[in-house]
Image (spheres, rainbow, N blue to C red):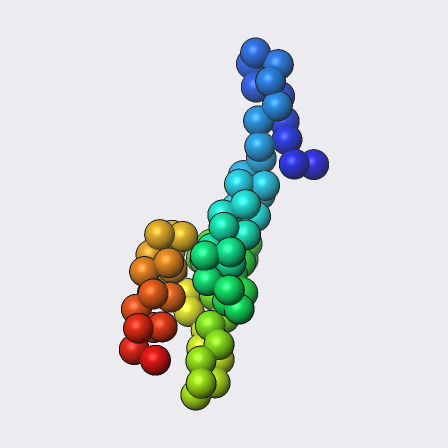
Length: 76
């Protein structure tokens, strides 16, 4: 299920749907990068392809993951 009803009877996205949308947004911003939320770890993850091989990143928030991806890509 991707929505639930709020007190006014309107559909409201579930936390899982919000996390999925956030991951899709990051993947659209960084083509080729795979992003997901780790349910078991509570962390955000990204697999970033680089010329030297893929790199796995972990961050506590999507914003911090975005910054890590940008930093890693700028270094090469």
